[in-house]
Image (tube, rainbow, N blue to C red; front, side, top):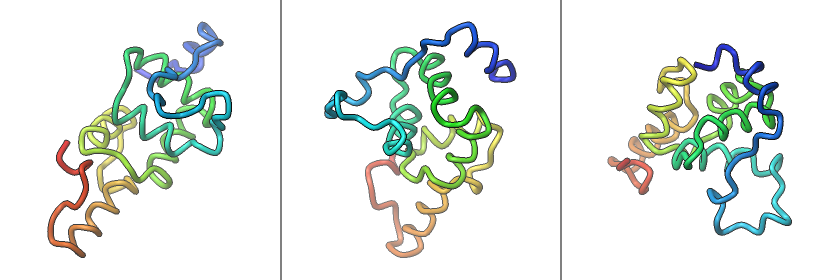
Length: 121
């Protein structure tokens, strides 16, 4: 679906992530670059009502398909189980490649069971 993301972005240059996903944030002071990990976690865990627009906006802000894919692998560690499954399918990744999954496995080793609410999704 995302093979032509660059063309989709050219066709929709004003695309933005739905601000409703950040209901508790002051959007007048929100820094999209400093909040990159948080933004990606919200988009992939919650989705919003415009998933295609949200995804294109992520590509626009965070280095395209490969930039988002690399961030998911190395920086984003707060994905729910549902979020992990979604990004694995969307970006052709294995769970074991995700920083989020690796951290969950480490917590299970330490505590013997899932320890936070993202593990039950």
